[in-house]
Image (spheres, rainbow, N blue to C red):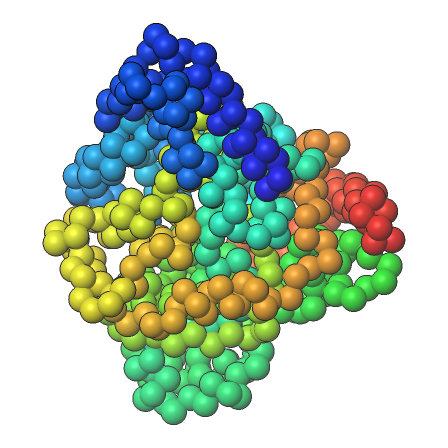
Length: 512
């Protein structure tokens, strides 16, 4: 694609130079920029006004447009309008566009976006992922438009900012349909613990190698800390790759047969049993199965331990801010695996009336440090203060506090909140580079052949999964019911179709 970009640049400038030469006698210049044009001196030939290779002519003036951007947030911001106004000062100057920021809370994001998309409303940029407002499912529905040509023409710097393995998660059938937000794209799943309790009970974290190992500590909290929830969760703490299952496809790592596993594996059964044991002992929050957001399990500050699926560098600061300032420590339970960039991306809607400008904006927000930090932290002097170097002091009560740098764009542009490791960004890049990459990276399951089964299985999971994964329901009684309903819903049909598509992908990519 990089060769195509360079070819496109050369062709574009050649065409512009030819046009300038042809019109030089009658025009002051070919630039339509707002800075004006310069007449060619009468004693110089027309071609003397042509720019050198490193002095290309300014682009034609852009017509003003308004773009809409839908994305999720943890909470509403009192000063949202002020930040939006500041954003527009930058975008108006640089791409002659204003951006209508449309944040929606995480709990209702998917529902509201489904309604908006169904109405066929003209919108421009949509945040999407593999876990909320599903990227592959919505792409198959035609919600997003392909971006390859738009990236070549209007986002070459954006494309060059990430390796191919990041773009693989934004591709369907070989075409790019979204822009990944560069962040930690590897997972070091593990535990988050309030440091005050770790210190108080002299917990030796080196002895905690699997989930079961934390149970004695949770019992200490239960017995000695009234009002504190030992372990907080929403949809449980099962994550396949901790148990040696590939993060991309449900296949045991290093399985030469590439056999796709059933919906309920023996590892998942054991995890459900552990969760129920903890729940029965009062170690898990009672409302675990009904909470909508993961943050709801710990953001009151009264939870001693919770599970973190990512383990990104610097997240201690974010967790600490979310629970009122108490220090936390991260304890990974597995080596980092490259889980891909599909967890946070921004796509351009098929209904966008200005896809070119939308791409210009996506390149800007991913490459312009001022704009990115404005979206993440708000207005300097009002919502945060610069301290030393790249560090800032944030104020959660200031009227604008997102705590979601990963929603907006490339975190390599961000300021560091006080308390973050000074080398947070370097750590992130190193983990992304060194994490184990799945042999199935680039495989995307097409649900079209099993649409009905997928919807039916989702309905079953909506009814049972959270309650089983949090231990709220006894797996001895309800797991057989759950598995029977999954089978009737078509889980085995989906598994067979996944196996078929995986085999085809392996063969096409010379892996089988």
